[in-house]
Length: 428
Image (cartoon, rainbow, N blue to C red; front, side):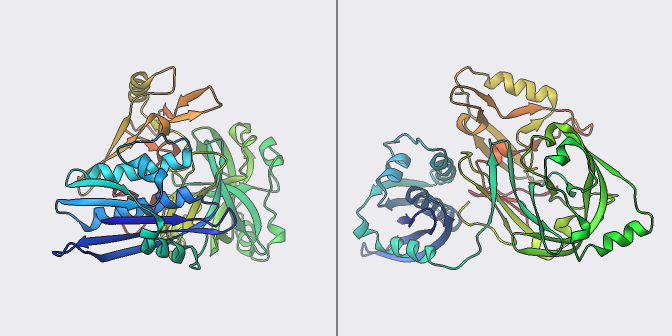
């Protein structure tokens, strides 16, 4: 039997989740064999905490129990039990639908070997899970970096550069390796509308000065799918989510295309990929510090809520990133869009198959219409897929936030790339 509970004390207080796994002995008594608690950040509702507890418990069960079994799932949340169980109550909120999808994915794996029964109980009969949820909410812990959801198209957060730190808003992008922000000499419209880095105000920017004194004034262009920048090299201290990295070489722009940067709420882009061959900026940020070996992303469905970025650890409660859509070859994308075309935003499910490069194992990731349609307003929506010719590679796909709003993604330099709900991918 799996019991779960979650609780929140309000928007400014941390929430917590708890789950307990029991085994029925020969005398019909339930013996506790495992228990888990989880601290959630502030701003989480009671229902979200309940779903987080359920997801945590289900994922642990999926890891621990391989043999056929009867699984009773018991909780004191009437809403969660009836939305997950046979009653299939309607889910009206984006955040809860996202969590339900996460739980459904695990249930779909479990039902192949388990008979699952859902039971609603009173809170007085759910004390152990309740204790663990309370314990989790009271634990000290580092809160992840908030990512602002800009109309489900961009997710951006803070970064500090220099000493004292100059704060910028950047899009964290695992599809590129270069960190750049606007420079003080840039006169483009996009630069004038954003904060610019002033090296003379940083006491640790002396390495960059030395580079320029040796004649290092070369400009380095970067071409994105929807825009271009020209960069000059600087070197300084970088701080992300309380992790400080010294001597990072990054770019300051001396020119930016008007689209899309002039209207973007972000000042620049922070590339989080591995160092690319012949990269003029040297080691990428993620290769510059062991503290950045693991990075976790969470994207929210609803622009009213923040996403998050965790550095050095992951949020146990939550695949190039930085791209808003799932982008693929032109012809294949056109066929996909034709297959899911609809006037009412209620297209069929789309399944993405991911194969490990060395293991050869295949993992299925399901996207429902609620997940892959981008709602522009109350009546208009469009599918989050597009065809683009990229790097002359006919079979290249970029899995952007259309997919990653539905899964918590973990990028680990030391381990296979991981997604929640049991899917494991391997980095190329």
